[in-house]
Image 1 (spheres, helix red, strand yellow):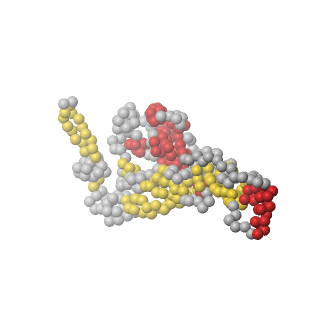
Image 2 (spheres, rainbow, N blue to C red):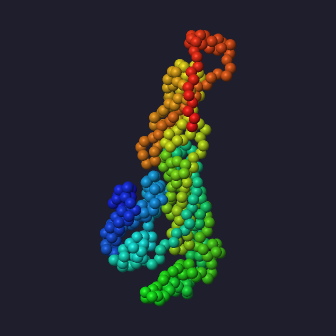
Length: 373
């Protein structure tokens, strides 16, 4: 799938204004009114609009920069067939109707056919997803069970009982809007607002569905598949567009926002892409040196402890940390050495230590200045 910045024709450092200007040029070029019947132009028009819907949103752009297509629920992300699962022309015109100076037609009336209604959006859903270090290290496909508003099975979203149909709202004559004309010092002006009787739907339900009470939606438990990229961290989040609550008729689906959490590991601590652990070795192993089999995120690996190592020294195992999100590099595993002094000795051990002390000569302690934090 093409990079969104390439579709818009800008680089990653482009400002919001640059993205807006570039998108407008592309949209003008491939507008369906300018290219009637041209399926390729319509495809390019939709692709540009869908890319702009992400790059023009600071939160979604940040997610895309961090996780790529999977971060915003597009492309190979489960539950979608391209950007957003496919935007319609009405979605495009209603969503971006204000980017060209506030006109209801996003192209300032150049091509005609302005759309009057902006699509309302249902509420987003937010969930927490705990992950083990191993899952973070490799990336994983997860299946989440969530409760969200779905289209009512009984009335298929109409809100009306079976065998009945909604009727046109008498207050707005089915338009969903109320126009109010007023006279001022500057002349006559018209204010358009949502009809308060039908809430902008243009319809009235005289016989509400018993399953949903006339809302057209009901709460259900659904399964959502999530592709978690390798290397995510506590506090990172991913937005799956259109996977949140469904709304009443005329509403755009909300988004599903997944916040990642890290389960505590028994021996590892995370520091960015690095992972830290501590190895406790005996004093004679520290003096002689030893080869250890060390647990890592990818399994066990050999680590050579040099002779004479001191307690508190840190050894680095390169490339044994977490992968960088959207990168090929990995962090390191840091192993802090803790030299253990025996708390009790057998007679034979004590004799050996005494002989070692004699061989070492008359050693005296060394004192150094301590720097306080």
